[in-house]
Image (cartoon, rainbow, N blue to C red):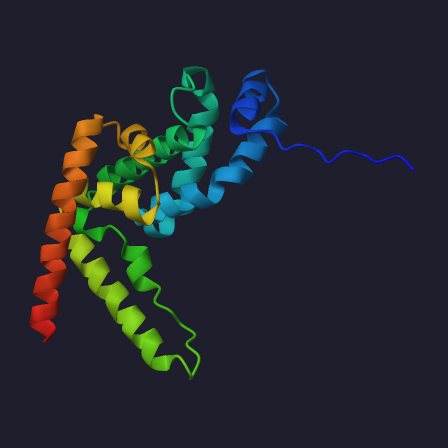
Length: 193
């Protein structure tokens, strides 16, 4: 009986190399692998119902600019930087106020709550709504760093790449943004009693 070894999945770097050499299937695998995080990034940065258009444009731009990807950071963080830029472009083209970030998350509350967990579900939805309101009040750059570090779970290196900021700026802005967010959440709690 002959045992066939399992196929080893290619890492992003190998797929990028193959895509640069014209292998569209390799780029399709990169798209499939990173669509969920790209979509989540676009939504959390305020693309809302246009998130699919934003990520589609980001993937097209990513493919066209593969030659510019140097591998100094992960492909994921490089791609998410493109998604962030496309989301910013969307905001500029719509002339939206910065306070619309996370609109999609706030507009889609938990819809099915089991009877046993009804109280817990209501409290969780209320806490999420409070957090979304507080995030909307933060300046855009503070909101972006909070979204990257805590809602997208990006590492510090990935956040540096995605936002295009120096490491020290990411560290200091994260610290200041958390202080501001805590203050907003405490005021909301006092206001509600």
